Length: 260
Image (cartoon, rainbow, N blue to C red; front, side, top):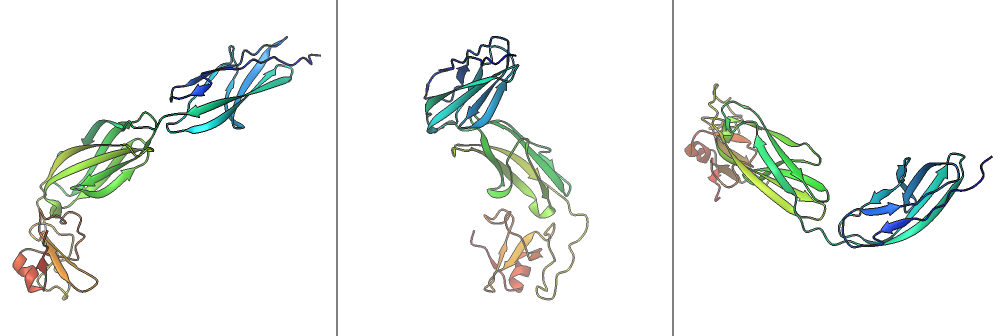
């Protein structure tokens, strides 16, 4: 019966970790019969099991890591005998200052002529890890993705007619950001007239706002009535309560034009 334990002589290269490059771990495990496996633990958490000679492994550390990390290595032979050794790595990796790389940014169409969804897709990579990717339409956030594939869709209506700059911002866990933009044109011809609105706004029409009633009206909690015209700073992000064909109609219902 085999009762002899394996032998270990663990070497790490390097012992003082100052980059995010992988650290090589060589156990130099030997046994009088045969090694079954070598297990690697980081701060008592199993990270990797090697079952073939030379039973080596690698470990990497994220940017901006400052710690003493214990690597425990356990070698077990085919009879169940085991031996272990613990080494301590001094880790001081630099802060991550490299932004994500946006390899591509595409839209399913560049011209929208029907009331439909457009899908926006971007390919992003990072030297550490991507936190999230945010999508903006004329600076108004409309979606985000936390993992690949980084894809978001948005539906466009006749009230959105006009040019749109779609911007994507990719951010990693260190706060580094990259961005790209693309342009699409929305040119949807309304096929039916807008429905009449309630008596509260007798000169307007019920949303969504589409041609010819593309002016958006909103009433604040304080009762102030403001309307927004296409091309205005807040037009694309405004969710209307009422739509108007002309500014005169909006003013007749007590609305004033937005100053921006």
